[in-house]
Amino acid sequence: MIDALANAYPWLKALHIISLIAWMVAMLYLPRLFVYHATAPVGGELSETLKIMERRLSLAIMAPAMVATLLFGILMFLANPGLFSQGWMHAKLTLLLGMFVMHGLFARWRRAFAEDRNIHGDKFYRMMNEVPTVLLIGIVILAVVKPF
Image 1 (cartoon, helix red, strand yellow):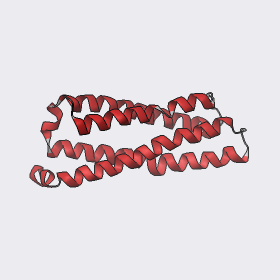
Image 2 (cartoon, helix red, strand yellow):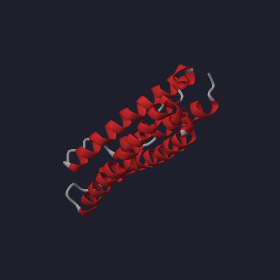
Image 3 (cartoon, helix red, strand yellow):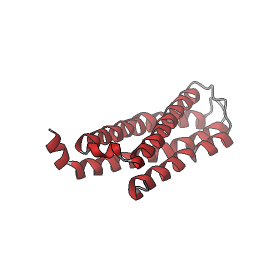
């Protein structure tokens, strides 16, 4: 099985990148929706529309893409166990942990909006919108440049 995975490594890597792109699209767009939602009147038409958009984005794109990214990443490790011994990979996985934390926070904040109990303002969500971008920049640099 390991040989089959090793032979499929370029495909696993491609699927990993595709999944990551889908996950990041959602991770960058969802907090932008939160910015608009934070200024929308509770119970209003805009608020209710944003609830639907946030739920669909989160459950139909963001969560499945995260799972696919993780799955293909694990399969890449199985195909090439030497990856785990490299320092840049440890740093990348640390930043990835930050991305998982952000994913969980976004899910929590989406549920708060869905239940009309948001406590944060639009400026907070504008700042949070930048966190996945910073993490993504670090992850890509580490994966491509492999500085250590």
